[in-house]
Image 1 (spheres, rainbow, N blue to C red):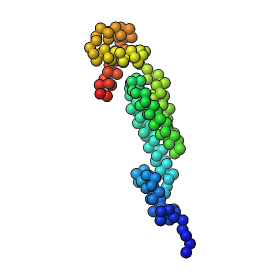
Image 2 (cartoon, rainbow, N blue to C red):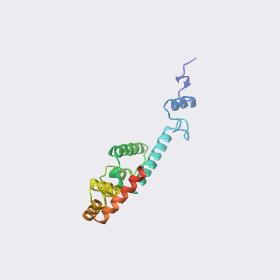
Image 3 (cartoon, rainbow, N blue to C red):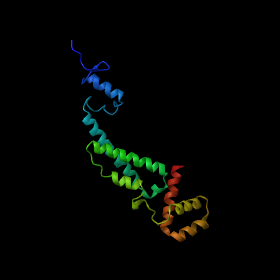
Length: 166
């Protein structure tokens, strides 16, 4: 009797073999909608899902890109890495990701959309928010006179955002 190649008691290439591989590689949840051994379909599905996630991230951060500078830099770096990894996965699966570079530009704060309307610095806006929160109207008025009406818009946007986050 010839020896058949097996893996943990499962014949190589059989349904039970691929089920065992998938189970050990923790791929069961991912491959549940894919035939047991069609990994190219798995990769295509992962690529498609990756593009959807990137588009979702872009849709979220592009709504108020001026708020991005007020998010912790560690969080922005993590999101940047997340998007970059998803982009690589999508490319590996043969999908192009049109929003990935725009997403990364926003997360790097290099896109002009991440700048304040008023041209005020982040620290000036943070000071304005602090004055608003502490009812220091005189100091707040001085800043608004210096930077203009758009500065008040910047302050209110960040103030409302911080209220939501706390």
